[in-house]
Length: 107
Image (cartoon, rainbow, N blue to C red):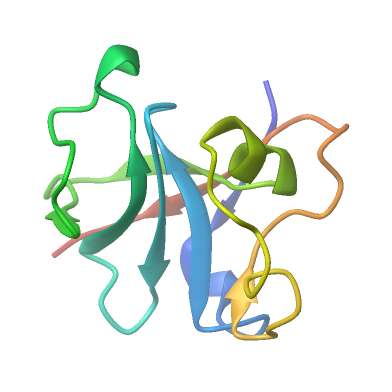
């Protein structure tokens, strides 16, 4: 089932949260602009409505995203180098545990 945290609580850890949206898009949310998902890789065969958009608006309601793990970068065929050693990015190191979800509210 996983645990859930408020995305605002991650601010002290970094300004950008690496996430998986609806299990079909790897991207990140800049906590300065929490209503927008910056897309790193979207998979239309997993259900993404977009394939080449650099950013997409997040639904205007309370929603959950899964915090990305290094394994997600392998799964989506995106290089993890650069994200793994920059303290501005927040992700989950321990991919063997249950998933961690972040809740956000878009006003």
